[in-house]
Length: 562
RNA sequence: GCGCCUGUAGCUCAGUCGGAUAGAGCAACUGCCUUCUAAGCAGUGGGCCAGGGGUUCGAAUCCCUUCAGGCGCGCCA
Image 1: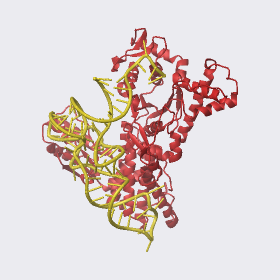
Image 2: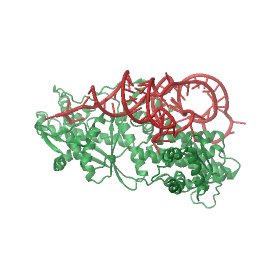
Image 3: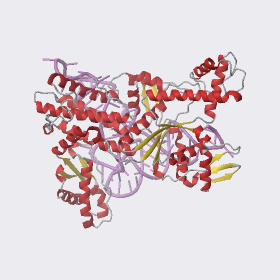
Image 4: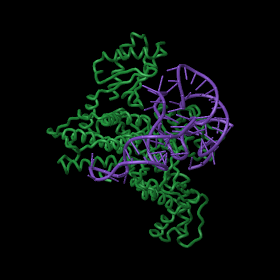
């Protein structure tokens, strides 16, 4: 729908370009005016050209419109008018809308996808929570956004890999191991204190209990130096299994889990630093080795090998991101908690040093989730090891609702999540509003099937040749608006894919559902006029297709009954 | 001190590449169920887009500045 319009304007501009003597033309913008009276599409191109042509926008618009009218294919427009300061407003013909609807019904979901990705390889790394404790709601938000984004990108023709990076080397997993060891000793009746900064959460003891059961007294008279490796490995692997399970129950699965430890073991950390060294981007100062990240826009250079010979945390991260490039990805997307934003320049620097173009590394920052209950903040103290886990919320509220709410805001804006409100199933809950529209249509189809002998999906029976479909009977304002809205989905979807903003689909779905509910209340679908009923059932079917597609992009289900 | 993010209706938030009269939901108020699901619909009220300055045909949007909130700035991980 948009493409056709852009194509026609483009043709008109091309032939005017010579006459104007312009070397280049600005990009053609197409927007959907907020007021429907202003047409179905509008472009500001005449105003944009005003400066270069040194003529009033309205005159230029006149010229463009005259040119467009002579172009074959411009008959999809009912009216083209110039308004305001130089807007060109297009109104589509009903026939064109009906044809669009027909196509949507025929091709269903495939007509809603796109190939803007052209198979280019994208890697999305998300969640990547430390395997030292359960996922909290913040991780859940990252999971929901990452999951939706991957689905969207895939539907947009990108070759997407979803990856979880496991921080299984270093101090944090060691602390977990020590904490479990201490609990183990306590369970065996010894007075063993938790380590400083150890993990105090309730989840630690069950791991120790497992070890008591399976190993008994085996580690009683050993020091942590002797049996630490066992405790560390056992503990974080156990946590990791839980993380995977929690994510799975949330509806989020990964293609690949990359271990940090493995990067060390395969020598990739050394290799990556050696590679930087070869590019003369590593130097020695004060007994340490530094990566010259400031050459790529970082504030300052960063230490990669400490004075004591140990790697910094940054070193394996360099190796990890180099490895991503070595695996052949065109675009690297990282989804991080917003508190990591200061880390972006150095990773960007490393990727650039290895040859990734600047714009091929994109970071989505996930802002905090404030958990509320009846409007009151839920107290969370990380120090005491008390926090509300993703599992608790999902168990209490449900995965669909939780995901949808996480996707009702831009990722980088803070989000309030009221558990009670989410549970209430009230009108305050946007998930139900959208799902209800879908279920309502299913219900109409059930009625149509029972009372009128229609197929399960209204009249639409695939390639049933006898099925009459007089879409031209859809002439009510609400029907035409609804069709336009449906045909706008691909624009919204592409926008979401290119800007990496799943919430655009969430908003669109709420609007579409709203238009449908409104239509439903005003017009009766199943009536005695068989042709009209068939046409309206078809429209309902189309709404269902788009609702389902959108919900599917968000990873949210579309129930037939509610 | 430096850097990043945020500031839009009473509340929670959208707002496309700088475009037309700034939107939605909730809350408040008024109506609508013997007819396809009332988890719904129709309507009313509600705004110094934090403040100030600038850029231009045009600014919630871009630039500068002030204020307020959040976060980040280690040879920690």
